[in-house]
Length: 408
Ligand code: ADP
Ligand code: MG
View (cartoon, rainbow, N blue to C red):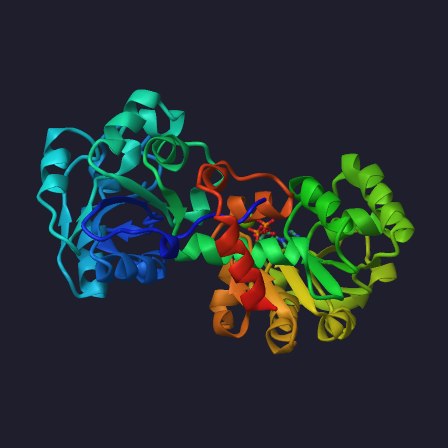
């Protein structure tokens, strides 16, 4: 995917800018309980403010399915954003209509307005052209800083940027494109991918795409058992997708042909019942009993995966190594997280649960890039074009060359 124009390259002084942000945060009893996503947009908002833009923020929250439901209101988010930014954030109780237009027209340079939940209107997820026109009416330029919804072709991610030009990337999307894009197109080698999570079937296109690019592929998590079964091991009651065994066999063959080092667990933590893991213990992969299931990778596996990670130039990680939500099955994910955090490689973690695991271990700052997208990150790794990114203007070639020279 070609580089996109960013807010650095456009003139925003005195202009009304529609900024698509991801303020889809948890709210309980009218209070934001986790404001990480709000904080993540501060660099973009502050940049626009300092450069005199009149800022119109738009986001969705939850799945109100096109209806106005008070529990999905962004009003509590306006309040929290105001506290974090230390500056007033005005709020209007809709995202289209005369009241919004009036509030937008009254904005002074550097002032901020937050619109009500985009998904209170059915036109948002349908990318209805009329709804997009109504959204675009109050603004002159478009900025997208919501990578998490970039894989969706919605009115606010695709419809509006077709109407407001320039349409550019904010700092969050810029960082995502830089790190994910560079890792896939021009990785520092050896390029190592770590894949885990529950199912092979969820990750087939990711495996397919990465096998074309990586030097080593480390597979843990539930999906490893389908690969182990394909190699002839008995996996007991471990997560197994019978209908994917052939697929796994094909991947093993392809890895061999392409000389990709593909590592599977050599030991696993087994238990007879995930909910009552009193009997959890680590066993070699060829000794799983028929009434046991594997819920984590073992220490020897962490050690071997770690050796490959330490040698890596680039590491991309998606999917936990085990049922990390449970303490008894978290050490594999913990061990790998630590190995990635301490390696000198360019390190990128993406995926909802993987990022949750890394953030629970407070290792975010020791990685090069923690991707903010769940589904969007996976689709990027699959090599798909994200509609919300494709809708943005391409970077001017002079800016692109300057960036390349700067990097050299
Ligand atoms: P991500 O959100 O990072 O893409 P996934 O959604 O694919 O990751 O997978 C995360 C889930 O996989 C977690 O809920 C975890 O409990 C589960 N999981 C990991 N290893 C196993 C295993 N061995 N057996 C069953 N579930 C597993
Ligand atoms: Mg997940």
